[in-house]
Length: 408
Length: 168
Image (cartoon, each protein chain N blue to C red):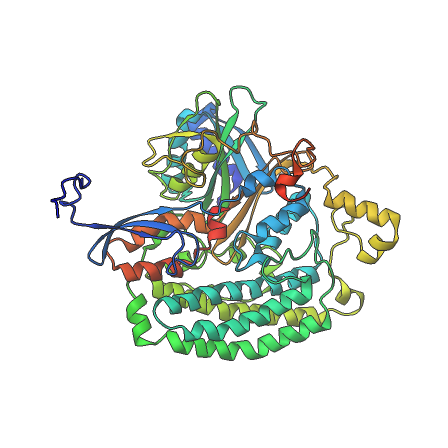
């Protein structure tokens, strides 16, 4: 065979001692559309560059042409593992902006749904960390209990993943008895399962050795990187929006804010795990408070704000005025007051903020979502540098990156 | 000593005089503005002054006001003091023709991507940024989509061939 002389190697390709490795955009180890261009020396990560934006959907631009209610389904698609928190975060922003007062029962019902969403979010994250360290069982096992949560959503709003739950001022309908029965079933069965799940991992030698000391960050660096939520608390900063700036009557509840010390993957796991117990306790307290309401108060599920709360469906189907009013609200024919507001809720991943600027029109002049994922993902390189490639995968999942929230 | 919006305002005025202006309080958060030239000085003062200690950058985003000639683009910083639990909103404005603004990414690592996002959508050029390139949009894009000059498609338009979109 003729000697090949036409192969031209890129300059420096022979001298280079590291390997460039593309992980993603879609890859089983990334749980979403993330691309990481890594320089690896053997199995050590030398550097990485994260590329984001694969599912960017221009939500902020879309929101500039949509009245308030049409923005709620957009927020579903941010962190889709806990969309009720996003929906309610947006509704709470609107209520604060429009200065609406809500009945206590609505707040407590919201707290139940939001804490259920937090549990389902943390459950996914923690069990996925298990999957990435080689333990698939926990993941499959807890899916059954996420299903129970989704059934409660379904009973309340009719949908499961992208929930579009609630209205400005409350809920679309009162919780049915079935919803409460399902909630009781969940409260009865889930804590035992969570304990089992915890026993599978928390003192498991393989799991501990895989996660302890990997992907760690100090409290100062975590704050500088804009970490919030469980990831910041794992580093030892006890910042929780539910405590610092209570919304939806969180000040009425008694709960702990679990913190870690090292900010590594193991601490993040433990913080999320402890938060699930706190969430169960909050749900129980809220359910108790709801049962304490008597008479007419026990039937309240929305505030009396006809300008923003949709009329009853029976009326919409039978009465002209209600139908007109329904369309006026949905099509956004109500002018907003002028002004701006920044309002935040504690999402599954941290502080989910809504920065709304209104110029007095029917749609926001500008709406910016503060997405916790997007802000803390930039620390990924610092977290994994010098570590093993397989630890980088675990770190990626223990940060709980959700592509929808990352890319907005 | 509890930090209040008034004490922050007084301290800022004492330090920067009439360079910080337009103080207002909207839904509990103190907002103020300054010229874009001193944004780093203001942010660094807020960060390093022990009595203020705004060491957490919650949010950074751009806004486009096409009618404010000479100050069309605005950069809004949301800062947070964790120990006193108080938020602060600080904004600077710049002309759409001269979009250079100093980067805050040396002070806050979190500003890195948020500034890239702001550049991506508004074309604000952060001077001194370590890696100022598009982040969510494709690199080949040659416009800044969140500026108001690019309207969303009118949903009632009729000139579109619906058959092409499967609704014919």
